[in-house]
Image (cartoon, rainbow, N blue to C red):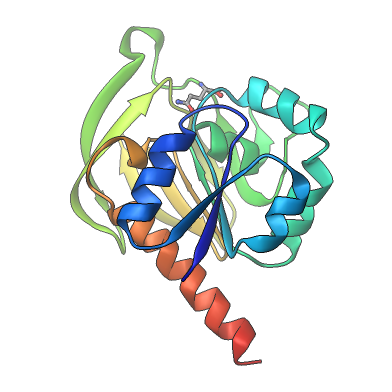
Length: 197
Ligand SMILES: NC(=O)CC[C@H](N)C(=O)O
């Protein structure tokens, strides 16, 4: 069975665990660096990126998360998780993990629209995907190896660069598990490649 980690420091952790289990994989909540060794892929959940970063530093997880990225295992950042993955953050000098070749802007859908739902067409995932946006970031620009998967209001809200998947919204907050399934497929394919080497 595939083992998926969910970074468990803050944010929508339980909801991701539930979605993973509904998709037939094992979910492991990651709070310590040793726990990262046991998983085939990792989800960085939504929540609050500044708080999450503080906790990553407090629990001394940054180097381990970067090595996880270097190992080639898939990582999926949702909302605040996307902010953690991005190589560049608009208005900030330093990124967090800085591994996915995108520039991200935080809280980019305006204060009066703190949260809203929209139906998206997501390449490789499907049509009419119910996407929940909560103080959501968006991808301002993306490197040439990044595949744009979805846009909303002309803004990029889902993208993939090889092992990295990122989206502005919260795919774990509805019963539609297609984004989680798509990520699991990425994890399965990566695992098979390693086994066949
Ligand atoms: N729902 C979310 O994950 C919001 C992200 C939050 N605005 C941040 O900057 O971290």
